[in-house]
Length: 318
Image (tube, rainbow, N blue to C red; front, side, top):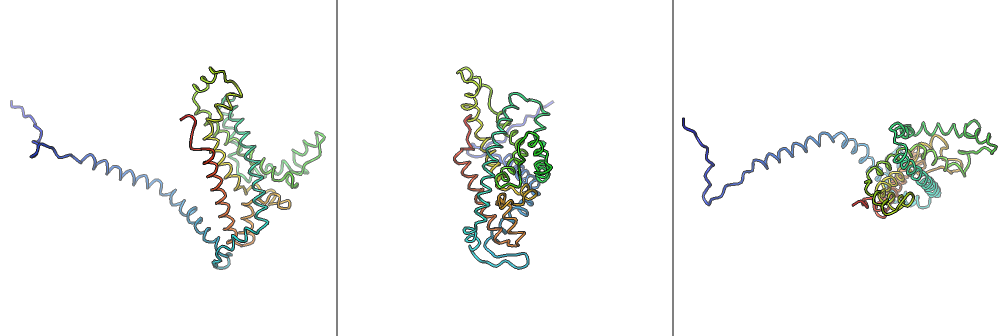
């Protein structure tokens, strides 16, 4: 029996083989196919983003340069809306009230969430307890606001009844200029601190144990370890928490709308609620759009400053 041996193709003149491009062509084809598949999957979200975010944003910017009510066509007036904003005392009052709300909410929510996260990391390791912390966050803003509105009511609220039982005078949490905005911030803190704590807890989980072991060998313990190791290594997570919390705080609306409606005497008229009043109650959509653009610029500037100076994109673990 004769055995046939397959010899390689002879080299062309010059002694060099031509490179085979079949692998590259196949890879390129597969890459194109993967791209089409990826585009197919993200198409619904992309369409939703364009229709419900990008287009309204562009139209809102355009309307901010017009005088427009829903009964007529937009009339171009240039920068007059922005000139009105600079001289509007209600805008500056709303900005100041919003600033108070943001400061109270940021300080309380971050401090409480950090404490809860440390307890979850060191003491409470039950999945049930961690899940229970998310229960207030799963509640709608309106429901949470109405719940606390009745609990803090001056006449029939259980909190005021408890205060009176302790021998102290009742507190008009929503009817007092002194307490109204702080009460709104406390409600928001109660609702969001569990979610914020879980974000910080995830950051604690990412810190290697050998870092703490090395610190222990060097004699670092307790509070010293927290300030010198834990807190610096948590910086990227804390910056994320601050950015998200600040943006959410500037956009507070539901709690104010269902409890105080901006009162008493503009003490809780936050910027988002003022935009709603000017645009929908007074049908001044051009001015309302200009206020919304100002709010967008404030949020972009605050987020940029936080990321820039707090170095949120850098980690001490690197």
